[in-house]
Image 1: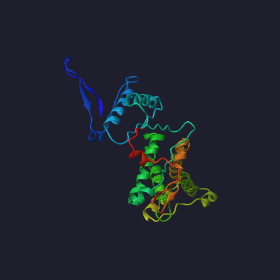
Image 2: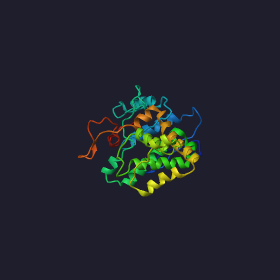
Image 3: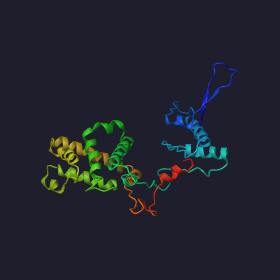
Image 4: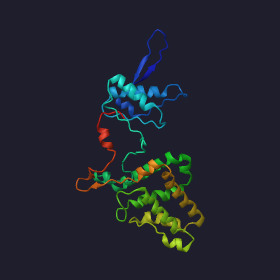
Length: 274
């Protein structure tokens, strides 16, 4: 992939083109420049070069939501004569459509032979990454106890005996709310609360110990847990994605054909630019 030219010390000598092979693209590349310096244009050139040089799909993520996608399509058409291998997926879409892909779902990993522990931990890590995106890294890291409680609640939801292999975030919100009620000083409210049932003794103790901590500390921590869930509801398209649970075909060990969803495996196996 051609990423630019190295200037030579002698004016009469042509600049040296810099190219990266597929093996070198396992490393990150940083392009730093001021506004208007041409970062977007350079990224488009990089993508065109990668499309021409490599097999497999090229993914381009534009978080700014500017004109980069349209500019790329124009450049791609001019260079290759068509847009047959280009798929543009705005998120959310023009009618607020969102990508239908399961989030809190470990069924594909289990079907592929991944251990339950590894699959669940991956979901916990991905959720924490999402919180950093929504709340910011500083705020996410402020309440350590709240993050510990939330991580353990997610693990409890995936419990092999009392939990499920796939569930919507609304269920996580309900479980956290029940735990909040269980720690209330109001007897009637406390009677309505409950702790999630788990088969792992250590996980159960990790959750219940917070109920026996200082009441003010518990209220502060559980409020932070609720905040880490409800903040996502403010991003409607994210909330809808996190609530999507497609039908699963147990016999085939895959999602049911009629389930409307974004098939990432199909995209990865195709040569299209997205």
